[in-house]
Amino acid sequence: MSSGHDAGRASGRDEEPPVVVRDRRRIDPNSGEIRAQAGTGASAGSSPAAASAAGGAGAPGPDAETLALVESLNAAVRERTADLQRLKAEYDNYRRRVERDRQLIAEQATGRVLGAVLPTLDDIGRARDHGDLEGPFKAVAESLETALEAVGLERFGAVGDEFDPLQHEALMHSYRGDVSSPTCVEVFRAGYSYGGRVLRVAQVAVAEPVDEPEAPAEPAAADTADAPPPDDTGSVPGPGGGGPSVDR
Image 1 (tube, rainbow, N blue to C red):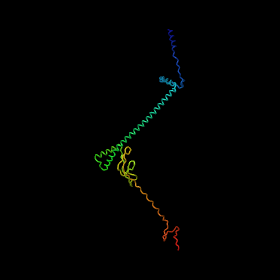
Image 2 (cartoon, rainbow, N blue to C red):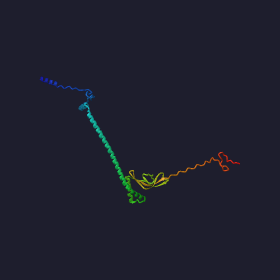
Image 3 (cartoon, rainbow, N blue to C red):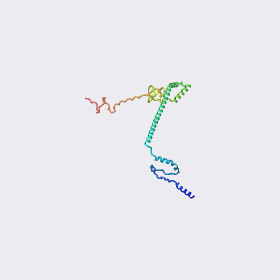
Image 4 (tube, rainbow, N blue to C red):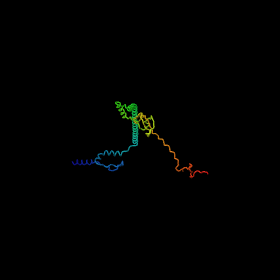
């Protein structure tokens, strides 16, 4: 039995734990970087990740070929980005141009339709001036005028308006003293505009102010205040005050 006990102690000495050497140096001799201090159990649980990061820090950097490839890819990305930005700007300009052209075409088409209705509006205006706009015809005419105004048709040209050659056509011309500038004194046919564009000018009679003639200059009065009165013979004494000499 003693021999078995001795054998057990001998086997225990043979199974002693190995010696563990811990490197507690703060600076890594391989990378020269400062090592992170040992933390709690939570940081110990993440030791594989820390070891991986430490291994990555100590790994050699990318070679020149890899750096050149990365730079080439970055240049390609920048070039493609610039192309996309340029295409987007061109598309935005195209879209705005198409929208502007579409609105212009729509306004021109509407203007042509409104221009064809203007003679009818002239007939309605003449009927109103003569007192013939009554009954159902009056209701229809007013409804038509309201609808055209809602579309954007504007009427201009009235007595008292200042003459504008871009909006008025002068059929008659006169001079009057009760106006201070060229003024429309009679309207023969109204004008119309749509969307800021004149569809038809107004035909009017224009009066201009009368040019007042300048008063003639008064002649200078003769300076007779200081002249001596004539003597008995009717002659005016000379500058010396004496009369004319008489030979005896």
